[in-house]
Length: 306
Image (tube, rainbow, N blue to C red; front, side, top):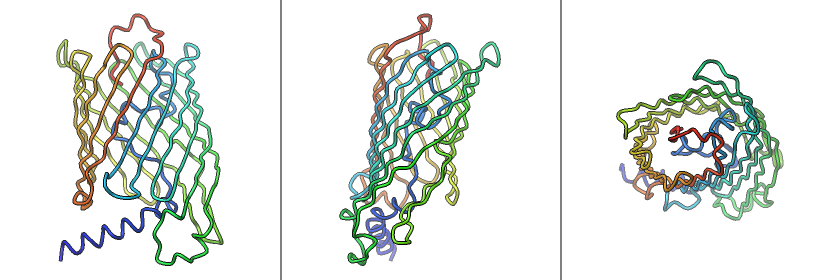
């Protein structure tokens, strides 16, 4: 009976994935969120002493047709001593839907103490949603709702605050304040709601060659349960990073990364599902590439680790 119930759940998931994204379009999730901070919090823009360029690819629930897949690009740095600017772009696929979002970021930094700063940011851009109904499976394929593909462009406006020192950080943000709904023949086909993020982390110097950084990311959107990601990463000899992460009631993850040089970092994460879907997929994979285009702070002898 239990196996029968799991098969029914899987069948429903495969049938619903192409349509679910249309009804509840929300931002993608990242396991290596600690390296992809600007995409989540505009206040992070320009807080590093470097001009950083970053590429990320995530394939979720390998083996399930229509499962989420995401690519992300971002670049940011300081324009002046207190001003940071950046650009980000994401390409998100889920079932029949594809979403492209492009944002320009601006942040202003306020020194609050000898070691602490508060960076206030804003992001603005566009969100382009395309739905190809031919990729879906439906109970009634002749339903007029699914006969004409959907394309819509909507504005994006978000804000963020990032408070940090050399050893810790805390942030509060949303990438989009503008909720919106899209209708087709009086039927709602897209419902976009604001998602809010709370993040924090601390770097412990365990020895001259070993650092440990626990971090947390909480995500909330109206009508859905709170999502919490907890991670712990070790940095060895300023070169190799190894860690574990846990997404509450969803997945556990293994993370690894290496600084190939003072400018180039590559990281990888593998998610193992803790839900019933574990029996029907081969996990989720995420790879990140980060390149430090230029270092404005020549006195920085080691990475800040966030």
